[in-house]
Length: 264
Image (cartoon, rainbow, N blue to C red; front, side):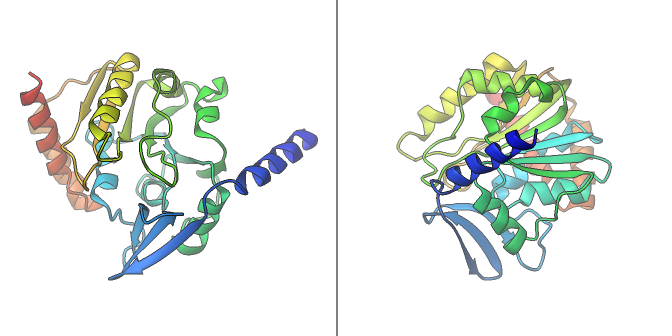
C-alpha cells in the first residue's frame, strides 16, 4: 500500500508540471482565480470569504430547493473553493468532498481563498474527476454532485460525455441530484450546451436549466428521480434560503417556472 501511494504521489507530481499555472487578481475587494488566462475560474469577496460571489456559482446551490439535509455533497472541480467552503459552513452535519486535478489550485485555495484543511467532514482530493465517478467504491454514496470542470482555455466542459454523466448518476443515491455549469466559447456555446443537456437526459430522469448568466453560463439541475414540483412550496423554501444563507433563491424558482412554461 505504501508503494502504491508513492507511485500515485509521483504521478501527481508529474501531472502538476503539465497543468496550467494559477494566478490571482484583486479588484474592488474581490479576489479572482485564473488558470494561465484572463478567464475567471472563481472569485471571493474579501469581506465575506464564505459567501458565494458569482451568480452562476450561487445557482449551483439550487438543489437546496429540493433537499434540506444532505449527508454527502461532492464537488467536481474546486475553482476558488466557493462551493466547498459554503457547503462546509452551512451544512455542519454533511460530509463535503471536492475533487481537483491541479494541485496548484488546491494550494492556492488554501493560501489565498481561505479553504480549510481536511478534517473529519471535509476532504479535498487531488485526482481526476472521471476516476472518482468511475470508482465503484464511490457509487451510491453522494446526495448531491456539483460539477464545474474547465481547463485554462474554458472553451467547453472538460468532461461531458453520456458515459461521464452516467457515472455521475451512479455516484448518487437513488434520490440524488446534480448541478452543472455549462459554460463555453460563444462561438460553439449553444452546440456544446445542447450536447451536454442531451447527455444528461440519457442518464437522469429529469433535467432542467436556468436562464443564461455571466455571458455564457447556464446551470442545469438533473434528478435521478423527477421531483413533484409545487411552486408555492418552492417559494417558501426560497425565502428560507435567502434569510439563512443570503442567496437569491427566488430567482431560481422564477427560472424553473419559466423553463416549465417554455417546455410544457
